[in-house]
Length: 113
Image 1: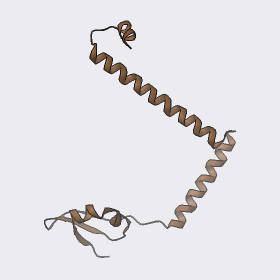
Image 2: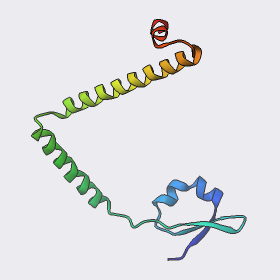
Image 3: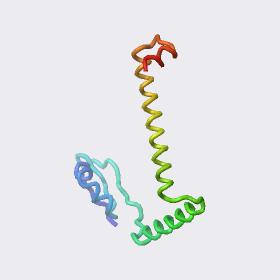
């Protein structure tokens, strides 16, 4: 398969199409080759779908073996996310207070918050 030369601007503007293509490209700027794009071998859509279905079945079996439901796992995940966000917010509030009152001790900071 021959390599097609294209300008970097054209490559950038049509990137999605080139990523779906199986054509190797030489990317140039002012006629000088900057690099090459060589696509990986594509798997068939059918093979990808079958692999995803098999993984979903395995995941369903695993969830069932835990005695849990998908909804319960999602609720637990959302709670973990909320806790992480709250912890992050608390940490950034403490940083703001520390920046505003660097000489304040721990007790002083707690009263300020």
